[in-house]
Length: 172
Figure (cartoon, one colour):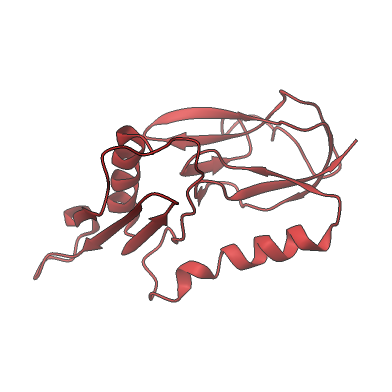
């Protein structure tokens, strides 16, 4: 994981009001905890700490992030991942289009434009299926599979995590 990715993750945690994010990879473990300063209670005053990050980290390993964008009690972060896994297992030959980053998911290029794809639409490799806003940058996410959109797994204008499934596609 690159230093810029860690910095982006720290900023996202502070902005979203998440209390804790833990990333474990083969060679390292990263924990980001956000605590509210005593007597204050504003989300933007959060203190962010990182621990256990070695200097050299391979970049080919995929991190698993378990966190919810709101500040619910600690057991809640695992809940959003469960429905997506159930949806994926229900279709034997369905392929997931996953988020390559953390940010805010948008189904349309701008509020006054139509959505990129609806359920049932055919998608080709390279087609833009959504936009993810991260750090005020809008990143177009392209399909890596040809097929038909079967299900949209994320609501428009919702926060998404790295590697979170966004769409289910039936390959053509």
